[in-house]
Every structure is written in C-alpha cells, then in structure tokens.
Length: 337
Ligand code: ATP
Image 1 (cartoon, rainbow, N blue to C red):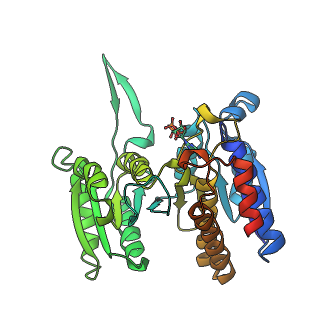
Image 2: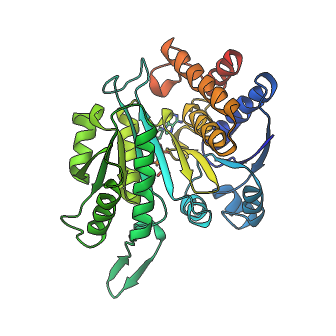
Image 3: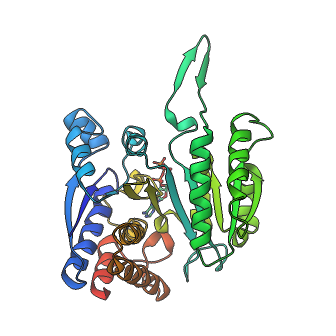
C-alpha cells in the first residue's frame, strides 16, 4: 500500500484531482496495486480560508506519505511549489516532451526530456529594492550544478534514444553564474564518455526547439530557463494538456502537470487531465525504482498506453482537437484500464 498525498489545487486543479483519484481508485480495484490517498489543501483557497498558502498540516501529511501528487495552484504558486521543492530538496525537475499520435504537434518523432535545476537561480526569491532599482539575486552553486548534471547524464544513460545531453545556458552574457553552470556540466560529462555532450545558448535552444526538436534527447539547464523552455517543448508536442512533470530528490518526489491553474477554463469540465494522469505514470516509475516493485512499472506502462491508444483513436479533449469533457475522457480511461 502506497500513501499518496494529493494537493487538489486551484483553477482546474480540483477537476484534475477528481480525474486522478478516479484513475488511482480504478488501479486499486482492478490492477492489484493499492493506494491510500489523502486530499490536502494548499494554494489560493488555503490562503483565503486558513491564512496560509501552504498549511503546516499539509506539509506534515506530505512528509509522511510515499509520494505527493500536486494539482496546479494559482497566484500563490511560489509560496507552495517553490517552497516545497526547496524544503524537500527536490532538486531535479523532469519534464518530458514526447510526440503522441494525432496531436497538433510539430513532428511525430520528438522524444526529449528537460532536466531543470529546481532549487537555485532566480527562483530562490532573494529580491529587494535598492534606491530606484529592484534587484534579484541569481544564485548558482557548483554542487547543485554538478548534481543536476549527473542526474541528466544518468537519465541519458537509461533512455533508449540518442544518448545525448545538451547543456543550455547563456554564459556569453552571464559569465560568472552560467559560466559556473557550464563548467560544472562539462566536468561531469567527462565521467560519461558514452554519452555525447553539447552546449547551447538558451536563445539558440528556443529556436532549435522549433526548427529541429527531434534532435534533442536530454536538455539540462538552470531553473528559469528550464521553466520557459519546458512550456515551449510542451507546445511543440501538442500542448500543455499533455505535459507531465516530476520533482525528484534523493528521498522523496512530487508529481504535477507543467501547466498552471488555467483559470480561463476552470469549472467548465473541458480541461485535459492527461498532463496530471501522465504525472501518475511518472510517479509509478519512481515508486517502482525506489521500492523495487515491478508492478508499479507495469501499471504505469498500462496507464500511458491507455492514454496513448485513446488519443490515437481520436478520443480527445478540446485542447488537442477533440470533443470529450474531462469527465468523459477520464471515464474512457478507467473503463479501458
Ligand atoms: P502559470 O503561470 O501558473 O504557469 P499560465 O497563466 O501560464 O499559468 P497555464 O495555466 O499554464 O497558464 O495555462 C496556459 C493556457 O493553456 C491556459 O490559458 C489554458 O487555456 C491552457 N491549458 C493549460 N492547461 C490545460 C489543460 N490541462 N487542458 C486544457 N487547456 C489547458
């Protein structure tokens, strides 16, 4: 039995959470893998009701669980996810972008993953006013850079594809911070002679994601660049509705969609739950590795291929050219599981 903590979130978060719960319960019933799910509040609603975007009880339950699923939260996201990433030292943010059939994607042969450093850079919140200026500290350390580089090379080793790591930075302008990041990645690359290594400036990477996305395998980059590039890579393969993410540390992991709370479509039963459900697949793979539990890998594979087959057969939500509601699409998945 795996204990799963679930932050239900804001905007489309509660709808995605309903979908995730119904998939996890179906797995409980049909697939012989047990989950004990605890729903938790955090985000804008928690802030207005409890006075804290990340209530202490929520943190306590997360810490006692085996893994956390987090639906998107709204304006208070920085006080929830950025804090959790640092508090739990979830240093690797993994954002795959893969072509699925019958998607509004640029090409059908894209299979890449962005490995984003998750604890440093401009996202540490060290900002202040100084005279008539506003200052943000960009912190990049050698330790964190090497740690994320190592994660990226290990990921490249395990993937069946191109065995390539692209280190993305802007060291020609930010010579000290990105210079350090590039140097740390280069150093780590020497330990992986079988993986090819290249460096790319972030602006060139943004262009190449449109021009030749099929050339990428593993992209390793700093926090802010990773955030921006992963929205782009999601769109390249068909949109944010299909984009899952994992935040991984040495002892714990949290899974969430790449997208935000999408208030423009909240409460309309039209959100694509695939991003969150593919995050469950990432969670199952992580649990499988951590607990040496092959059942997790099998169920994760089954969940991904169920979503894959549905999309292939044209059963899709509106954002990717279909007409199914969130509830209808989820029901198809649970029926097919
Ligand atoms: P954030 O800054 O928190 O990342 P954002 O304002 O960039 O949020 P998102 O919530 O990430 O916006 O979404 C951008 C747009 O993509 C939304 O306006 C919405 O229309 C669409 N979108 C996002 N997620 C989904 C989804 N799961 N299903 C359908 N459409 C989505």
